[in-house]
Length: 258
Ligand SMILES: [Zn+2]
Image (cartoon, rainbow, N blue to C red):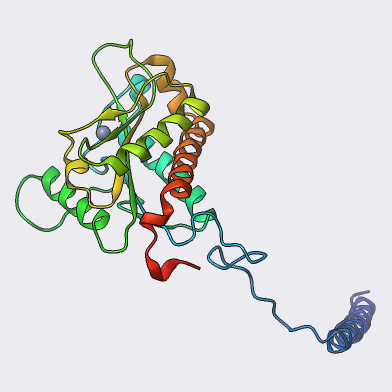
């Protein structure tokens, strides 16, 4: 019984090999006749598709997910921690931007606190390290993502902050807030954030988005939902797109013009 099976198996293996060999030959001869290259190069987001560049091609964007590591940021309903939600929204925003051809630099991609190795408090070292990443040469635009929390559960809605001395940042904030209104139904207006360290220190055009209030029970529940996080990220992405399409002439470096 065993011996017969082995003979069958050897015959099966042999005919299988002959079959695969002739199949390979058939494919090879068809390929030779077709004259096609063996490997077709996959198109990258930075190459023109049908002669057109992706909408954010040439733009370098820094995304800063607020807090991280031992700095959790605000704590909201149901024990939600700001640092986790800022990172989730930031990673979704990164994906939208990269798909549109932008080069994205993240201040953090993990649950980490940063440090520039200098003096001061842990928070100061973290903030300086973030500014170093955001202010490095070549970065055109920056988005810092946070979530709000106040003692009262009444307030809700996403809002975008800009530095009052930066007209370019104000325009970016307006575009983002308009899209946030459309996608996540906030009734809030843009806000001037003179005292926010990150906006004061930011060299590229940039804003800080407070994506909602963790102190509002209903909004906190929504902010924890990945679909809602995608909507927030998409709104920010569209705001950047609107801004870039209306302001790209003054921002685009000469060597980037296709
Ligand atoms: Zn924060």
